[in-house]
Image (cartoon, rainbow, N blue to C red):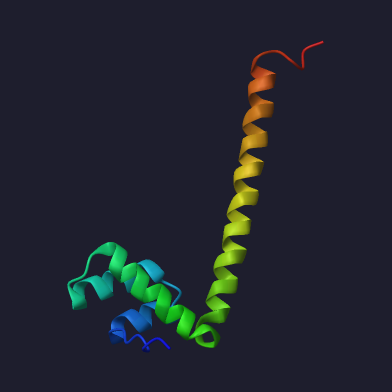
Amino acid sequence: MTTPVQLPPDAIQALEQGQTIRAIKAVRQHRQLGLKESKALVEQYLQQNPERFAHFRAAQTQNAASSQRVIWLLSIIFLVGLMWWQGWFSG
């Protein structure tokens, strides 16, 4: 069994606000650890407390899907504009 991870209060507060990067920075500052170690601690904390942060994980997943849709839409607009500029639509 793994020992429960204890994070500084400001790291937990950042996680409660859905700001994982800010939480990692707080762990780095308080524990004097490297980026990789701090990230691992934050991820372990999230795994040990899934019910507490489940709504943020769902929101992050939804935001990622929305971003992908925007990128696809902009790509299509760009391609259509490029085709128009190249004269593909002129009779």
